[in-house]
Image 1 (cartoon, rainbow, N blue to C red):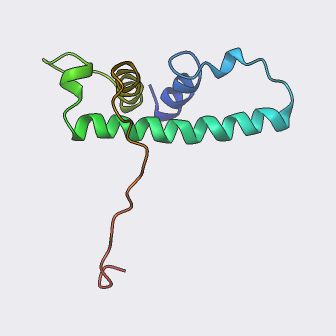
Image 2 (cartoon, rainbow, N blue to C red):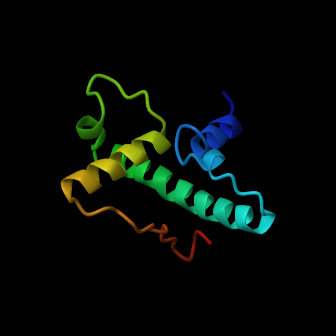
Length: 101
């Protein structure tokens, strides 16, 4: 499955279910897509946090991880909401020294 196929299936049946919105107005659909894309980036970020901070062993099987970063992010979000754990919401931009620029 290509990266684009994975992205579209995450937007549709395996994630946000945008295909069930039945929005036909192009302006409203564009706004929904912008919001969904921003949410997608945040959910993938949560997946990275899940891997980086060892949440995978709490939210998924311990012998191997066969989930995408998107799916891990959704699972981490669900776990945080169910357990009243603070949800990571910020992105940290890397700091570059003047010599790197």
